[in-house]
Length: 117
Image (cartoon, rainbow, N blue to C red):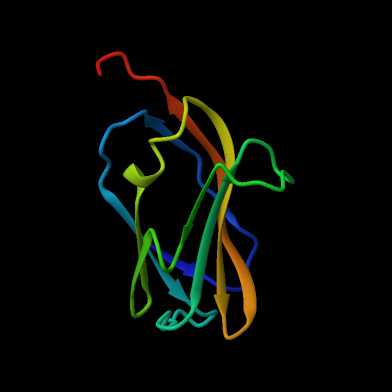
C-alpha cells in the first residue's frame, strides 16, 4: 500500500482476537509524486490509548521496538498489540521524517476476548 506524507491520516480500524497471532502489516511511505521515501534513520511511533487525549498510552510501538523499516517499507506485527485487555482503543501511527511529523493512520482497535486459553 502506498501512502503520501502530505495528507490527513487514513482511517484504519482493526478488530483483533485477544492473544491470536496475526500476519505482519506493511505500508510504503511515498512522497506526493509517488517516489518512495527512505525511512532509514527516521522515526515511527504508534500509541494506543483508551481515549484520544489521554496522557498515558496502553501500548506504544516505535521504530526501535515493534516496527521494522526497510527503505520505504514500514512493517509491524499486529500480534504485538493483542496482549492488551479486551476493549476498544484509539490509536494513530506517526512518522517523523527529517524532523517533520506526519500522522499516517488513525482509528479504533477493538480487542475481542478469547474463550480458549
